[in-house]
Amino acid sequence: MAELFSRDDVFAVCDALPATRNETPFGPETSVYKVVGKVFAITNLDGEPVTVTLKADPPHAEALVRDYPWITPGYHMNKRHWVTVTIGPDADPQLVTDLIVNSYERVVEGLPRAKRPT
Image (cartoon, rainbow, N blue to C red):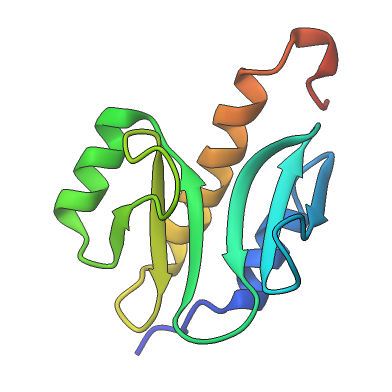
């Protein structure tokens, strides 16, 4: 059986990306990861199941929601541009990691060139 992805794994992937910052602007129960002030990942800090909301290209987001029951349109976010991933026994750890990195990269691509981390 595959190793379960955890809340700590979400934090480890986010922390490993350049110029990231973890904040709690919505209160102590929600972690918000930003790169140069722009959000790329939102995670609940308490309770189960663990979820992470991530930015995604609209056609990719649509396909993810269609193909994976543990991925839904972004909770409290623009449903075309964000997905919410429920971390549980069905979640593929490599796919979750890839989605976090992809979310980060999408946000970085939208930054002015001079502000992009190197």
